[in-house]
Length: 274
Image (cartoon, rainbow, N blue to C red; front, side):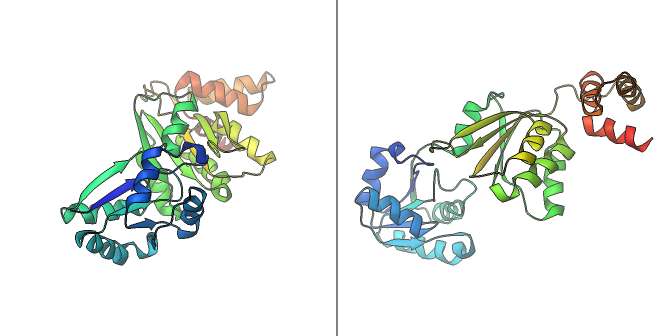
């Protein structure tokens, strides 16, 4: 019986293409691709000629059934995404479901994923994590998503496009507080970069630098002890005393946040409101 092969491709550096992935792409009858133009460049680089079928978000329902029917009739198919593992925050997820429901055998040919690669170099805890994908562009859904996960104790991983990065950092700071973060950009490519710091530091950095390339955001989980034993007024008074003694407001609030268990933004808002 024919199969569906879930084939990972490099996330940036073509030297990361695996021999098995090349073998499968050469052997299948056709390839389902998120963007056929991107996949054609990859195939051309490795001298592979195969029929391509477009399979992206807007047409995944009708094309998924079509692809599954072709496999059921005896054609082997490989599904690929533009970079990395297909079916992870990707319409290939639906194709796997459709094929599984029809009893079609599914084999995986793994490769690096941007999320796991970023986590590995983030410097943040890796034993437990939650991959959150892309945040919604709809403000209501985005806020609901962040509210849902703000108390998660484990590391959080997000994908983000450069033109939305600044707004996303602001939203993360407002909801999660001033946590540690690693911003991983253009992994495995020529301009690969990992910036480590706090959310407030990254917001300040990108006020001076324009975001470029695709990003993976790896963020520290909520503090293990979220029980607030102190009153917010204690934290505010502590910060106000520091400010009156010459400390910058941002630094005073940051120090008070660490000492009393409130977020820096909570303390600052309370000070401004008084």
